[in-house]
Length: 376
Image (cartoon, rainbow, N blue to C red; front, top):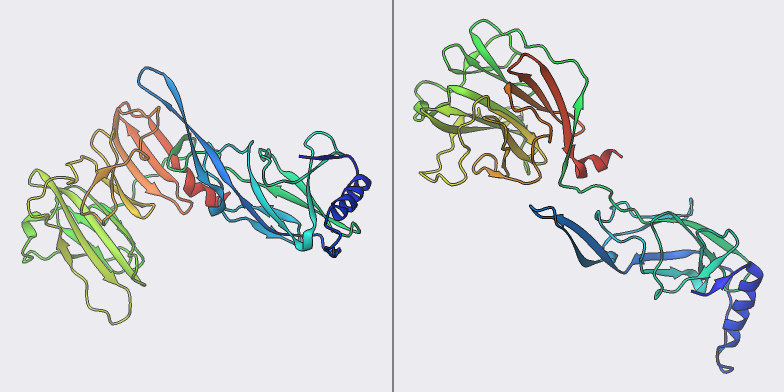
């Protein structure tokens, strides 16, 4: 880059640039001083991995930075990307493309010397590890505009859960209605529970009265779970005012999964439960898990239970269940637990309310980093 110590020197440079044009070329100078487009070129990405022996390897790849859109706020004179670049991006050596209005000259302010500027070139790499000031001087030299340019890079891996041990009150157990041994959850107009006779019950009046929801005459009544039962409800994708209800638990020594689709529109047909029979396909079945908990998270279902060392995920509404390396328990989790209750709050935090065998209680909170970026 060419270093310029003052605006006077820049004006001299503009004159020289104009004079360098052919004598037969008519040069028109303008007083516009604005950036009209800003994009990134190819960027390097560093991924650090460590094998079982502790040997660290750095893999270097590249990706196209132009796919990340930059916003130019002409009023505030700010340029930035809302969608941050991936963690591990080399922000210290960035090629960028700057378009100015009517041949204005772009310059970068030096990071250390206040009165030193460098004329921009698309072939020179720039350090964007911190905000940079870009000045555009009009081609006639009569005015300039300064922009604050920020290239945002994620500091965390998106598909990683950051867990923290919380110092909060442990929720008390709810008071159970007569004849009910377990409240399972629900949504605005329907609540579900398991009766002391292992019948699935439903309430339409916020728990005041309960009726059996799967009749004894149902063709698959022998498959209704009666032990370690869990239930989760969530809005159904691609269908307005429709709730998906998923129930799972142990029946006859194996896991049984049921579903119910509830149309909330007035006058809609009454919904009913269906047993999700996989016709003998055992691969990717949800294993038998004691103290099973189900939660809806990141457009999928997560299942916790058993020894709690494995979290299972379903992306197809409970049909198949697989592991996902993004979902792991806290590093310092105490697996000597009696039970764990799992919940998800409005800010996409997963809460683990743990009752330990020794009588102690712990509460953990965590969420996928990329889901937390929306709240920053």
